[in-house]
Image (cartoon, rainbow, N blue to C red; front, side, top):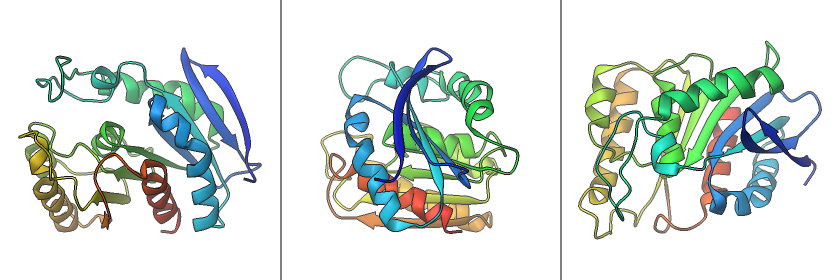
Length: 223
């Protein structure tokens, strides 16, 4: 791995920084504890997939169901409902992370896996500060999202979507709709003229999250 790794606290959040001198791209990624264990491999995969220079900043999300969603929704697993902390997390990125790592000509890509992937595509509709976004196996089934996506326009140039080909095979009624919702989301982006791709990966939701996210970042950097 050619990147220098360090851990630092920025704006009250733990950030895992993989730094390269004079990066053309800065990749931003909300992560949980499982994602953190995959970061080294993820960066190695990105290095293998592109020769573009980049710095990756992964920031730790402590309350996953509360900090990454734009409006409240009932719980899917367990008893913890989803919250409306997405706007605050986006503000954190813009006010705390971007000023530290991004120069005026830096291209910024926001991406993530699962609920962080959903946060990334939601953010694509909120701000034009991002060059593109990456949604790897996102929670695209989130209540009322598809309707919102139909009625609003993305503000980024490039959007990467991916899903495991077995992810719809689940006991959760909500998550069973993930493949249908993903195909519809891709149609919406195509209809709106957004440069986008939908890639299908082998397997279910709980595998290869680092590789799947890396493929998305590499694709957007290649546009």
